[in-house]
Length: 164
Image (cartoon, rainbow, N blue to C red):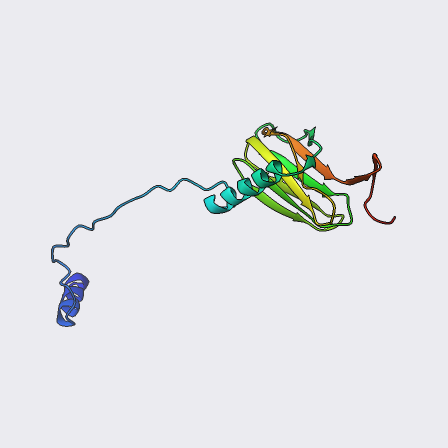
């Protein structure tokens, strides 16, 4: 007896489906899901945009523009670096194609890759008496690095906040 016939007999004898039985075709549905570039979901990205708009609509100061650098491969995603030059914590909201919320500890730094596109950036220093900072619309382009340095001024001079 061949192995095939033996297998058929064993499967049939155990109550299994005979091997030579007609199988019904499977109803298979394939759905292609585009990759998500944004690490935040749609709801979180909408919340970031809402937080930027809220700070723009109230009393605020101008967030200094990003300093643009280069040195990246031409097709590399833009990199944005945030430098907290204060002794306070700071939250930064980056609203655009790849929204981000960045929490910076005192004297902390953070770097993130974003998608190419137009962004609005706002920041809130965790200190009484300091209004939110809101930047102009910024275009981040592939192959470039950008740096935001956030500091507190007093009396028109740039200095670290608090005692030295």
